[in-house]
Amino acid sequence: MKEKKTILFISGTRADYGKLKPLIRGVKQAPSLECKVFVTGMHTLARYGYTVNEFEKDGLSENIHVFMNQIYGEPMDLVLSNTVAGLSRYVHEVTPDMIVVHGDRVEALSGAIVGSLNNILVAHIEGGEISGTIDETIRHSITKLAHLHFVANEQSAQRLVQMGECKKSIYVIGSPDIDIMLSESLPSLEDARQRYEIEYDRYGIFMFHPVTTEIDSLKNQIDGVCQGAEKSGKNFIVVYPNNDPGCDIILDSYKDLQKSSHFRFFPSLRFEFFLTFLKNADFILGNSSSGIHEAPVYGIPTINIGSRQNGRISLPSIINVPAESSAVVQAIDKATEMKNNRIASSMQFGDGQSTKRFVAALSGKSIWETSRQKQFQDLLSWKAGV
Image 1: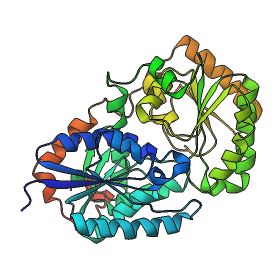
Image 2 (image 1 turned 135 degrees about the vertical axis):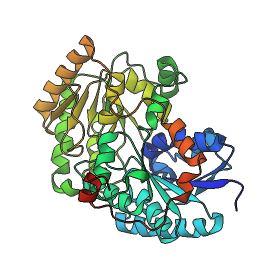
Image 3 (image 1 turned 90 degrees about the vertical axis):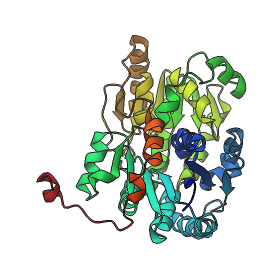
C-alpha cells in the first residue's frame, strides 16, 4: 500500500488553474498526499502567453508534466483524442490514486475518460452547473464519468442527485477560487497597474468568448459589443477569448480597437492580478463566467451578453443584454451608476474555505473506499429516503 496518495490534477486553461490553484497548494502541503499536475491545452500555446510559466512561478516546477495537446486551430474532437492519448501514457507512468478535473473543457473530459477507464477515482470540481453552450453538455458528461463531486453550492448538488449521482459522493465545498479572492495576499492595484503598464484610474474588464453553436452570428455579436464599448468612451482592460472555434473572429474584431488608447489587450493575466483589477473595476462586460461567479463577490456589476451564461444564477448586479451596440451602451451607463451607488457582495458560490474542506475529505479514509463501479441512484428511491 502506498505511503501517500498521489493526486493528479488536470489543467488546460488559465481559468481552470485559477480554480484548481488553491486545491493544488492544499494537497501539496498535506502530509498524506502527493501532488502532480498534468499541464496542457491553452497553457502550452504562445498565442495565449504560454502560461505554463505560471505553474513554475507558483513553485510547482517539480510537480508538473507539460503535454502539448494541439496545434493552433485543431478541432475539439482531435484535441480530445490527443489529450486522452498523452494523458493515458502519463497515468500509466505515475499511477495516480485520484484524478482531479475541473469544469467543462475537453481536457477535463479527457481526464475523466482516462480515469474511469483505468479504474482510477475521478473527482470533478464544480459539476452540476448549467450554461447556454456545448460546455454544459461536456460538464454533465464528466459528472457521469466521475466518482466524486466537489460542488460550489447546494443547488449544484441537487442537480447531481437529479442526474442519478449518489449523495454520499457529493461534497459541497464552495468555489475554490473564492479562497484566493478573499485572501489578504492579493497584489495592490498600484502593483497590478505597474506590472501591466495600465494607467487608467477607472475602467471596465472586457472578456468575450465564442459560443460554438452560434458561430454563424458571432461576427455580428462581437462587432455590436465592440461598437458599444467604443461608443461608451470608457476605458477597458481586455483579455483574449478562449481558444474555442470562433476565437479568430473575435480577435479580428479587436484589431480596430487596438488603435484606441481606451483599450488595453492581454492574452492572459496572472490570476491574482486579474482579481485585483476586477475588484477595482467599474464593471465587467462580456460573456465570461467571471461575471457570474467572481464579480458579485466583490460587488462589481456585470454586463452579461448573449446566451453563453444562460441558466446561471440571476442577481441584481447582473445586467443581461443582447449583443447590440445601443443595448451595450445603455448597460454600461447603468452599471457605472450601480457601481457609484455601491452594491452588496454576493456569496452564492462559497465562503473561502473550499481548500480546507477538500483536503480534509482527501485526508480521510472513507473517500478512498468509494466504489469504482458507479450505480445510478433512482430519483424516486432517493425521495423516499432509500
